[in-house]
Image (cartoon, rainbow, N blue to C red; front, side, top):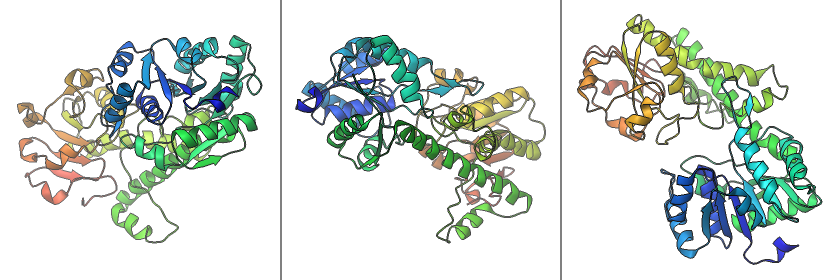
Length: 436
């Protein structure tokens, strides 16, 4: 087969977001000629200059520049063209959920349509996008066949290998996390496995079907969501009973079969708050998966209730949220608890302010909040502070600049209560009334 006989196979990576660009750059530095395809022309232009549009991903800038100089990485906005000149097509286009938590395929459907127009016989298509079980074959394989006339498993090879990496650690994770791979048939599984062995040099977990590969990634995220929900539920109960949850976690986890997670004011990002709905929308409508989503999303309202308990009605109050991103030291607002806090504060008549050193003022305003620098004189007008994402910059905050502040709600249990010495400021954590 063609893709087996070439020393330098041609690879198309469809989708040049945080994961797609990293994959493309790694492949291009491992003896593959890579064409990245993306509908964003600014992204395409930056890659073709040898520049990464993704920040805070250690090592990525170097890999992109090196591949550019070696002429092994280029980009185009024409997905059909990229696919037509490639033997291997890697698809990493987001599938998300809409405001009603229904699975949103709009970007993936468009990408697959273009792939189908450009694909040639004997190509290998590997979908890395996290999908509901069954979609690789029955939605996207079927669509490629309808448009191209090529049958998956016969005229082209089809595999699924879901991404399972962590923002700010992607390059390290690609090398050190086992790659789960499933194929529509044995030949597809072998070709995909051989590719990843050479392209990434990582361990492989070959599973029996496309559906098993798809299911495994969603199951990972459901597991984490359920365990975080358990920690949050126990933290709220611990507060009711006057128990310090941090002490409970430390004591309980000394038993090797216990692994209680840390509580917080919610979960965010592209994975945990989204992918459980891939099961829910396929029929898993009752049980822990659904309940965990409700518990974790309700933590924002619980945080606001704690502010109200300490400071009274928040109507007309100025409340500063520290961190627009869903977690510390990463620029990623998708499904961030900050967005729930902003919306619910506005509903209650409060004025939400946001500080996040990773976002511009313009970006923060897009999410309905007023940006606030920690050097701004308006800090003296804040009535309460909620820590949502603990960026490294927040470890050195001088709370004396918030003389009107009545409460610091430490939504990630990161501050040291004893270091908040400004008179009149109360401190509360999540399940951790005493602080660190």
